[in-house]
Amino acid sequence: ARDTKTWKEQFFGRLDDEMRLLRKAVPLTRNGGRFGFIHRSILEYGVSRAIFEPLKGSGLQLKAVKKTVKRRKSIDSALSFELDDVVEDTVDLADLAVREPDPESLLVKRSFVKETSILQFLIERVESEPVFKDQLFAYLEASKTDKKWRTAAANAITILIRAGVNFSDQDLRGIQVPGADLSFGVFDSAQLKGADLRKTRLHGAWYVVLL
Image (cartoon, rainbow, N blue to C red):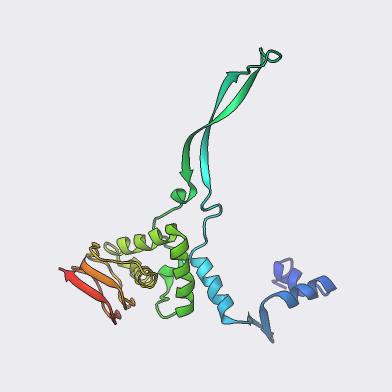
């Protein structure tokens, strides 16, 4: 009764041919009253999209336009005017995206350090979306002064390292990244004084640390 007049009633309650076809096309399996994805990769992809959804229109440019009036040259329209668009400024929409750490992000709520497939989706995001890379660095920066960001920071540095980001000469003093996977990271001359690196993996990492 509680599902009456909800999407559940509309989706599962209708028995017409169109809805039967739609239910068969949905990538879900049913076992009694329980539903699941037909393959784990669909769930993992969905999680990665929930963590970072590319800005709609990303890569496009927003133009600030000023209208100027000039007199037409033709004799027939000597008393008329036409408008020309003059571009005054161009702003990349990516610059309008929020780069502050998001307290509602899944990166804050749980560790994905051992979720290889989800990490791979997120690595692709880093490579294609500079805004996401900036957001990950924002988590690292925030963790320096507030421990509530340490799970997100551990996720962030794990993703960045796997995406090939070089941390040489970076100021990482005070970052809180317990449990992060720093394997094969490059930290040549990085500053790590006061950093929380408990239970991190350092296999193959290259570092000459400045304390």
